[in-house]
Image (tube, rainbow, N blue to C red; front, side):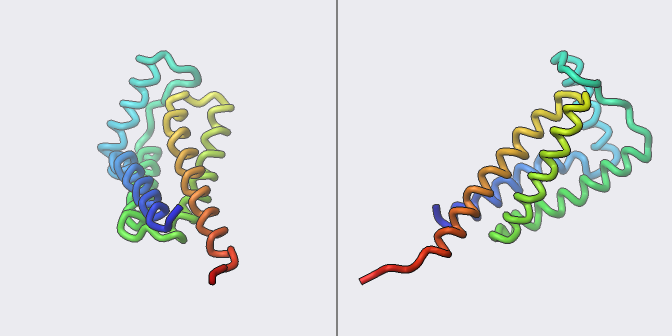
Length: 143
């Protein structure tokens, strides 16, 4: 595995994050996305508690975190470094853990769709980072 593969993975998961989180970055689009998630839960008869209707304060925090996620995604799109990939991998692990926790507590299974991509990003980037680290630590042999 090459460092260019790692850069492509970091940039690719950042692009995914940008596409998914951009709609959560304003109060108006965040409310619309929460409505879509509510609709998905109901129309697919998913398990867990349906998405609640959010108050303006809830929507503010959704939009606030949407903005932060968009900014972080842009950093990784523009500078897909190993350090940014490592930080993102840890973040994806934490977010995945919180998703598993709330799913176990009865949250809508709509979150499972997000969990799949969070875990995929964590494992793919993590594997590429570990591979790059082991290559860097390997002794150089030659003639």
